[in-house]
Length: 92
Image (cartoon, rainbow, N blue to C red):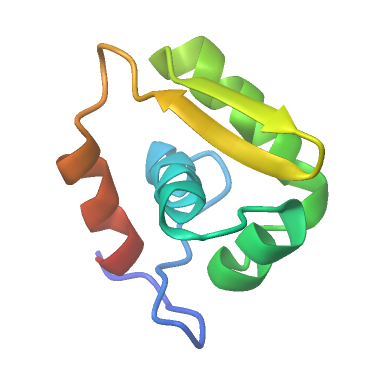
């Protein structure tokens, strides 16, 4: 199954699809200043859902991800996710 892509070429997976979370995590890792606005601009994920999606990444996949001020920081990808595999979903 193919999915539409935004103007940056980022796949637009359905809301409850885990790959959407992987796109979010990859964007946070890629961006120099991963703020809610910057992540939303790159991924086309609604700003209002990003904080909840970050909580899902922590709870469901064990990612250690913090927000300091407006900027997200990945401390650890956890034991479940493999960084190189997850990053492939940003450009799928």
